[in-house]
Image: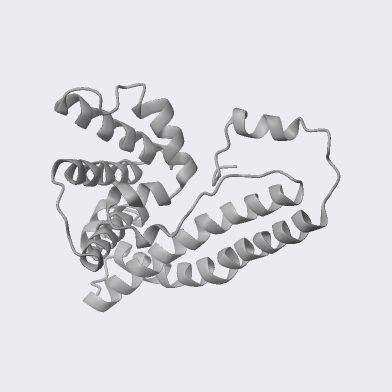
Length: 224
C-alpha cells in the first residue's frame, strides 16, 4: 500500500463494482508473470545491490574515508536498489490486481532514461507525482501565477513529496533538491544533445539519492 501504485477512487471503484468476477485464464497467467517479475526485482536485484550499497554507506557513517570508486560504487548500487525495490513492489501489486481482473495504472516507466528532471518525474512513481500535482500543486495555483508564487508552489510540493517518504530531514532535503532541479529546468530551458541531457539528469538524480540514503549529514557530505 505504501509503495503504490496510488489508485484513486474514480479509477478503482467502477472496476470493483462490476458483476463479472469470474477468474480469467489470461489475467491469471499475465498477472502471475508480472507478480513473479516484481518478486525477482525485489529479492534478486534489489537485495543484491542493497548489500553493496549498505557496505559503502555504513562505512561512511562509521567515519571511513571512501575512495572515488568506492563512493560511486555504493551510490550507483543504491540507485539501482531503490529502483528495483520500488518498481518491484509496484509490479507485484499490479500483477496481483490483474489476477483478480483489476487494472492498476503503470507506476514506473524507465525513469533513469529521462532526458530532463521533469521527464524523470513523469516516469518515476507516476501515481504519486499525479496525486501531488492534482491535490497539492494545482490547488496552490500551479504555474498560473507569478514567478515567485510558482517557485514557492513547486518547492512546497516537492518538500511535501520528501515528507511523504518519512518524517526526517534527509527526506526533506531530497525533496528540496528535486524542487530546485525542477525550478532550474523551468527557468533555464536549454537544448542539449540527448546523451548529455540523459547523463546530466542521471547525475542529478543519483546525487540526490545520497542524502536520501545516508544516516547523517556528515555521512552524506563525506559520500558526496
